[in-house]
Length: 379
Image 1 (cartoon, rainbow, N blue to C red):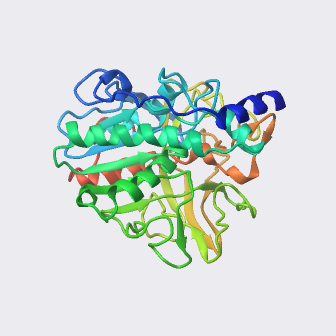
Image 2: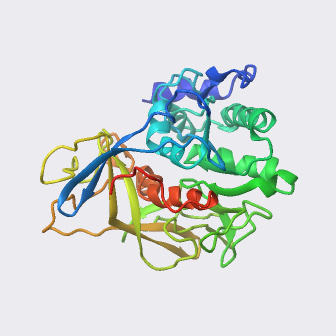
């Protein structure tokens, strides 16, 4: 492990970034409108209700959405070195699990970029400077964004969607390319969980963004929805990478994805990837007493609830499972990040940030189209 860290440390501190990818080529996009790709392929999804598995259906894919969604995926690449290559492997799974379902309510755009790798996390812990790898990754995202604006946008409203590293990229994009510019009027929402957005304690704007506020009510546009997830009664400890602000007077922003502005517990509309191999506290999940899931994705409504907590520098989305031992569905969900047999306390339920409220996020985007509900979603 230390040898790997040393190699990555040297790589992070050496060399210059190669030329930007050519985003005029469709081969450098995982999702683009009007073609067959990950986002245009319906997802087989089964409803998981208290009485067991319900109907199985296909997620919808709309042809004439009135809004665009631009997605940047999280840290998933296990490529060697500090930046990934442009050959997608784990990235495809991330797009399928976190973003493809948005094709039921918006035109989908997902560039391939040279993201910072999983290995870089170890290198940074050993003292590597992430600035060079970050510059490479962000340079790609910015180039893809500019290509999107020049070739595809044509004045259309858009939503930014990201998670973890992807949210970090989009934070930077908003601050450098959108805030204070005419294009800001077209940004309807930014859905960027899984990376700290800082605001002054008790405020909705300031800190990470100069003029872009947190969403504080349903139906609000031109705002940011952000959160970092932690299991109930397991608040982020001081120094946590997510959910704890080190800057004096600041807190980590939290928007309840079920209802922006809500402060109490709200039930979540969730979509889970049932075939995930990620470790879960307590061992693998038995999704239903009826046996194995009949499809890769499961929808649960109200199995989990969430509320925003802001206490001084802490700001996070507290998630609890509404367990009922008498019904057939699981009493447990996962989300913690496991490394070498341990779960990292300062990462919370990072892996559940997107999927725990996925149905709620889709409805937020649907509302921009004037739609009430995406057809074909299993219930």
